[in-house]
Length: 229
Image (cartoon, rainbow, N blue to C red; front, side, top):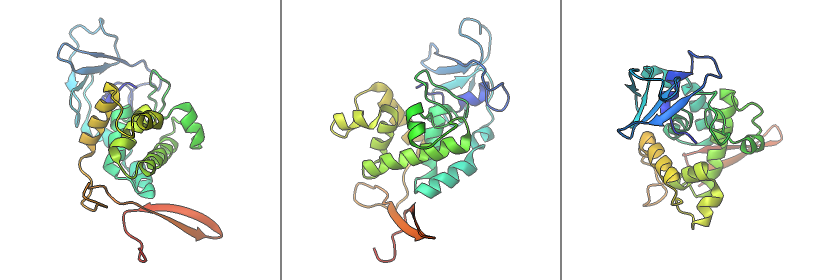
C-alpha cells in the first residue's frame, strides 16, 4: 500500500473531487512527496511538511486540525472494541492519510484500507463510508490483537502483510521492509501503551466480556477487570 499519512488531505480530502488523481514520488532527500500534479510537471511547485508526520511532504499545505475530522468515529469504535484510540488513529494516518476515498494500488479502500474480501467478511457494504470502514477496520484489528495475545507489533504486521505471513515466520514481524517500516511508523505515531499491563512485557490486558441482553449475546471489550476476575 502507498503510505502517505496525513498528506492525502492536502490533495483530495475536503477540497477536491472524490476521484481526483493522486501522484507520489520520493525526492532527492528520500522524502515521500504527495501531490495532485504528476512528477515532471511540478517544476517550481513548493512542498510543505505534513503535521504530525516525518519524511512526508505535500504540494498543498495541510492544516493540523483536518486530521482530526474523524475523531468521534475513532473514539466510538476504539472504545467499543477495547483498542487504544491513538493506535487506531495511527493506523488510519499511515494507511490513508485520513482520506476516506483512498484506493491503494493493491485495491485496498477507504480510511483503514480494507481489501475487498476483508470488507465483505466484516460486513462492510460501502468501504468508502467512514463509519462502516472504521467499524470494520477496528473490528479486524481487534481480531488480530486477540490472535496474537494483545501484541500490537504482531497485530500491525498482520494488518499490513496478512496473518499468514506472520505465522509462517514463527509469529514474528516478517522480514519485509514495507511491513517493518509500517509497524515502526504506526507504533511511533501511536506512542506508548497505558501503564496497565498483563505482564513484564508491558502489554495492556484486554478483557472480553459476553453479556446476555434481551435474550442475545453481546460482546464487548474493556481494560477494566471484571469484579469476579
